[in-house]
Length: 249
Image (cartoon, rainbow, N blue to C red):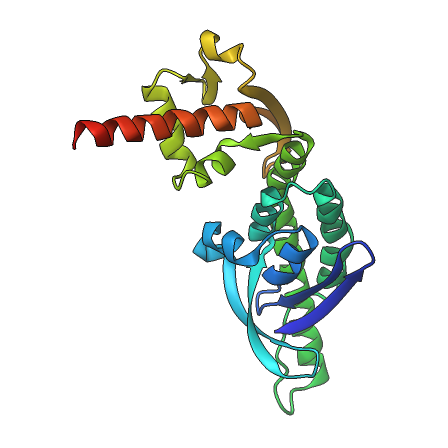
């Protein structure tokens, strides 16, 4: 794996590695430090497939293992941050760090005594495949990048996923529970609050644009919760849990 360190006056150092497929991975500790997050808590909320252990060198040259996240996991970490500079961090990574990594092309192991023309031919093939992977990856991650910016712009608002994590459940579980309790309902794939709750300042509707793999632009609406809404949900579910416990004692 190729190791690269990127430095920013605003965000410090971000250590990266590039795997055999040419995909970049970011040191989780460095990213969390830049976004003022605690690594151990962020790691608990990340999916296993976006996290990897890789060897890096410390300040005196010793090799040690550290947690890294791939590009998809990077956006998940950014969404955890309430820091106003989170959007600037994402732009720095996607505008400077990733292009600098990808301009080196793919990974290629050169065999001993291999003719130059064979090496060149393989290098061109790997470069072509790396460019194809890059274009595909950009198409896949553009919606997540746009979504990250929308959430960051929603001052003092949280996604259902963020609220759910604070309750030790998934967004799917929380959405289902809120529907059963008559707080919200699902219409055309979008969750909406019933009128009695919509006027309480618990949530806001957000819309973001994204581009699919074919290049077509779409819009999607989603619900974000205010701090009042988060407190309402926590209080409501805590009260229901207490009532259930009392009934069974």
